[in-house]
Length: 186
Length: 253
Image (cartoon, rainbow over all chains, first blue to last red; front, side, top):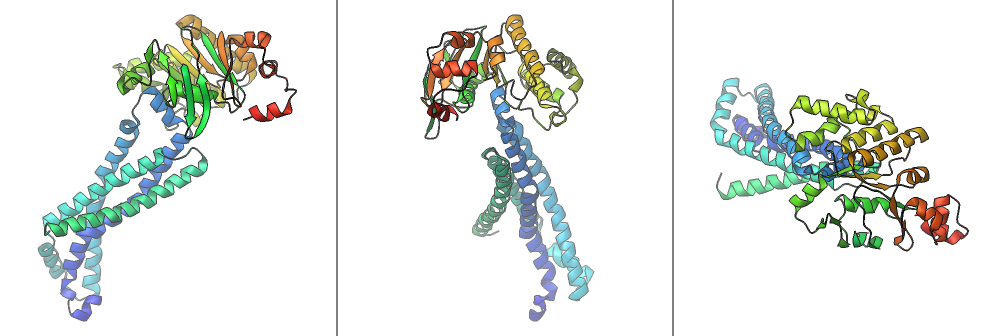
């Protein structure tokens, strides 16, 4: 709506498209997943720790990293990029609705602008960021769970730490990506 | 164990521990609450590196060895934790099967049969598809024992196996431990302060003290009860409160 002031309503498709695909979809998905799954991973592992289940694995010689952490990280690595793509779709759909309903942009116009502005390479960029966020969230939350204390309160502390660490980590990593992209002129 | 010191951070739990466990014997680690019995056990199964000293298994130093060798040694150990430490998201059957799946090349059907056999040993075949949360404390312990026996270990470690068990289940567990020694030739290290069980099954042992943070005596529980020169040990083994209230406060943990 603010674009109206600059008579730039026509560019809303470009903005929405690029912002969603490059940044918003990846970051928002990652933040939600950090809260949802990162917290769950940390709580689950911290509870296992309190119940001596982690000790039992170690004593048996089953490597905790392979058995607990790797599948968790892989699960995120597979699903988060897919969720990112879904997020892109929904984000651009939202932009479409606002543009056509309130900014007098035609459907065809929106579609045309979006395709013109958002190339395949932008999707690749966002996709890769999503994958990086997935690994970050998975590893961080599992590590926090493994380092948790053994009481019930410690499980809660681990869960909240994991969520916060995930969110802050995602935003920091996003900044790194932005700077790197800028440096190579992308 | 030779001159071992165990500590968490700056807090020394036990100092200068030296003892030997004979193969095929049942060795008891005794002492008041908080003296570090479980800590000694944890250092023997690889969960706590001693601050100082050596832990030798068949002459090989456990902690100086590389990780692969340590794992190989650990694989001959079976451990029953205080709360059974069953993996709560898996059924009892899956719990017992996990070590087999991880370390043997047996097929699913053979594993299932072996699991049933191990569970039958502890009288838990009926619970093969139940989750640990659905079982009572005694049943969980027995299931945990089946898991500890999964790979036919040479050495078994029990951390307070009778804690929370009714007398009958406790005596059944004692019988089972004796069978394991006599039938399988297993060496058993048991941390406990259940006197009836200790007298019934232990051949040898060590008595740890929280105050002096070292071992007060070596010998079987029966020998310690009858022949110990130390008043604290005698009181412990006869289950009578000590005459000196200061001493009681100190070793209460």
